[in-house]
Image (cartoon, one colour):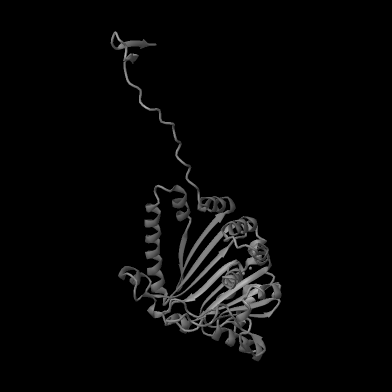
Length: 347
């Protein structure tokens, strides 16, 4: 349990002394998905305190680890998560990923969270690959050994994810053959990361829509890739760039998305705030790309976050129940007298 919590703490704080794009050289050359979070930049933004308070309130309480959770929340600079296009195309529910966490870490403290039996993991090119769990499947289980590993490269870099992905990343570091940060799926990464604190680039495999409803498959059949960016400097800025196979496919997709947005707005007639937010979405087509943009100021974002917080329902008020009283005049009946029963009226 302690090792699981440790991994979630490492991967959960989602940071810019060392920005996420500085780790792009470590990811797979054939990456099909890249997800970056500039946590330090978010914390230093105008709404950083609001977001960190929200994260702290949702963190599960773990006895003895409160100080560590607080340290990781403030010492993480950035997180980069990547998966290869081949891994995504296989359709696995959990494709192999590589996680690169940048920051300023107390390595000895983090290692103390991993059970001693896992600290004897393998060494690869001088780097320890530590197991997250016991490594062996339970008796009778058809699953193979757990391949998830953690590696502390130094006090500023942590690798986590699939064992084979970690070994490949270490190979790229040791040989100096880092992944080009401007080729393939990363060709537009500079523009995307320039003004965004959270960003993602994903290449859509041909098999992605095989199980989608026919209407959705027809609308998105021309999609090749998607870029998503979010910024928190002045509130919330959201941009989505959809890469189509050609200009005609982009125009068709723009019209379809505008229709979907209009339908979504009408469905929120009983929620004026959501309807107003939907109206602010702007959709344009630029050559073979469709762009969606949304901007909310700080007040609008704070209101949305406040509405997302769970609200307890007040307990129903209880009223004491008085036993029913007989109607009409009150009296006392006395029996056992020689002269017979006597009825005495009571006021």
